[in-house]
Image (cartoon, rainbow, N blue to C red; front, top):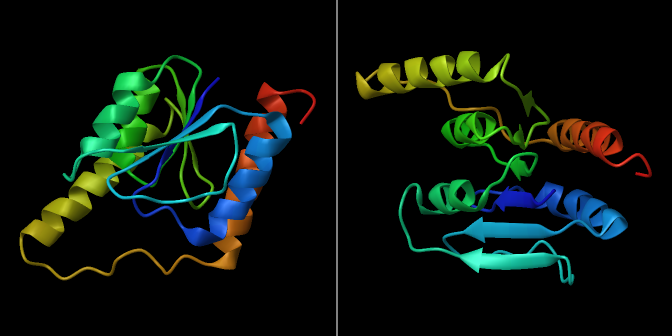
Length: 151
């Protein structure tokens, strides 16, 4: 299993959590973004900067992604593409996307986009919090314990 991190807008609070898991499992990780970001220095982590553009990082992740890999992303369309390739996706707030729930998340996201496009003002997501970081850590640990019995 390879861990892919959608580095665009990756919260700083999650970097040490993710780094510890990568180091503990010696988990091959590829961080892809359209700008340089740093989760930590490790032989397990490869950083890849792609061209500027709305979906450049997402497209590169999907291009490299194989069945059983894990993607960390807050991008619901990317999570959907990930699930379609029989891989796994966890968002920054700890939601594990699955075949059973991804279409619902995608429909809600698309509805909210239509509302915004029509000129309606909507509130964005709540500010990222320590509680969100804890939810992410819990979901990541749960997922990795299932995948790696020695985690």
